[in-house]
Figure 1 (cartoon, one colour):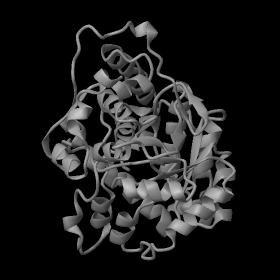
Figure 2 (cartoon, one colour):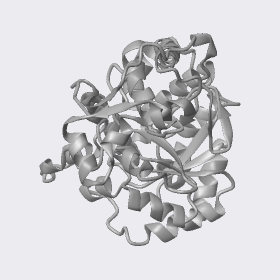
Figure 3 (tube, helix red, strand yellow):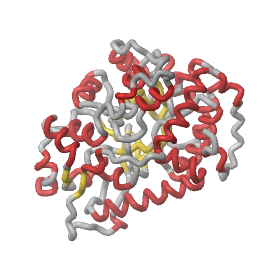
Length: 379
């Protein structure tokens, strides 16, 4: 990533990552992902969060001093209801980015996830590009990250590599299908996820990678023992587009915008009632504190941010990202105050208006939009 976050300084990180290791296919792919993800951030785009608006009630605002941003995820208390979601690892450049993201997480109390650790499980020399996260953030909440193709033993090894607080298992069949070197055997994934959940010494979060989780998928995951999911919907970094750009033939040009949006995934997960026993996280297309608050209002316990924070790091360095996270915290508190929400849970009683294409999709999936607009009356 030429002119990237690592070039902006302000970190004091002595990386020690060997760029000669980047000649391997895993590292080249990781660097491609960083470059193409940043390119997508340069083109602002509308997404389903823009179809969602709060109903304004002028006399329901509360003092900002009465607002708590705390939330509880995977049995742990977090001071903030958003986090740095999975991005990268597995190359020298990715290692430097992980070190800087971890510094920002440590300075702000934010939870953080690494990118997929498959490269390090295959190539031990790449482990430092992931373990730097724990080195830079020794006491923070850190997610390890694997896909369902690893064995239970490898999943445990990924957790141990980071002394992780929880484990993300990413499910990405769309990305794999477009990727030239991707997996093509998806039928075993449910059984593999179940085995990973049983073996993991820490809570497991199953997440999509930007294509959304349908309600039947969440229900299936619950039957496999999964207790936390990140719906990670359409609207942000598009890995179908990224993998198509990596192909010489660009054969999957028509896959742009495949999947369910984050808003639609959250709506269907919560209606007509929440999927029993499953806590929701949300990511995908989160561009602002307002998007964070909208996702929380739709039932997410916390909201993951990837592309926006990566772009901020690239443009402004570690200190700039720290400043951005702190400003987001101030603005999330202000928005909750305006909505009369003293806690994150209170946001689920706020009135919401859904319009546009997302409203039509939601109707087709049975979401009662009029009830969504009158939630405060029921509360």
